[in-house]
Image (cartoon, rainbow, N blue to C red):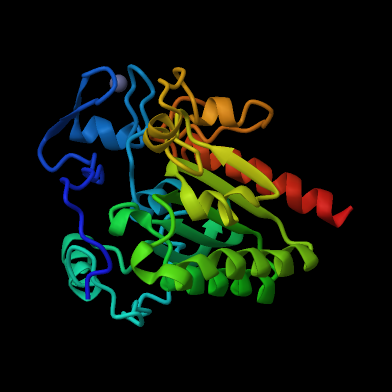
Length: 292
Ligand SMILES: [Zn+2]
């Protein structure tokens, strides 16, 4: 049953993958041509203008974790269509499409491994899976990753990239905001650190729950961080928004850290990249301070 029908054309989805399929790609900000090898060496950023391309869990794991130290867990949890939901197409067809188009098991991958020799529990969203939307699978996997951190007394590191809640799961997706926030309260009670890394874009129910609840929140350069995105805000207030509105730099003006993948810290071809160096320093700081 369709709940509503749109008479006008749908708002175009902007979920296209920025990663190059061929030998080179063009920077969407400054039009610089970047060759694939150079692109990987630069940790998927543009050397000329510092544009941070959207990447998924696989790339972040390769940037952050010590070589071969990461184990992915809970890859077999799947969404069900409990509401029998159909919008322009049935939810189950939409999911089947997503599994076909994406290598990711859902919009969140979790696991554990070592960063600079320190054990951590880790979660990373996959924006290419239904716009990184938070449904019951994202909530459950997040819960399990935090529980793993509590059980093994580890810090929890989470990388967010999300268009918000998964509308097709309606109330069940909204409930994940409470579920993830509640388990983070348990992590805090256990006095274990939570580092939240916000990447482009972190919006909707994800920005309104776990992404903003880090003991330390880190933003990637120019990442869109918002509840309602700029297009919706512009349509509502009928005004053009100022340059840089809802970007990491303006949202995080008073915050200290920036997760710059490539242009600060050790050179990108070292064992650990710049962003990973920041996380390592934070881990040392948080663990040392906590044991005082
Ligand atoms: Zn560029």
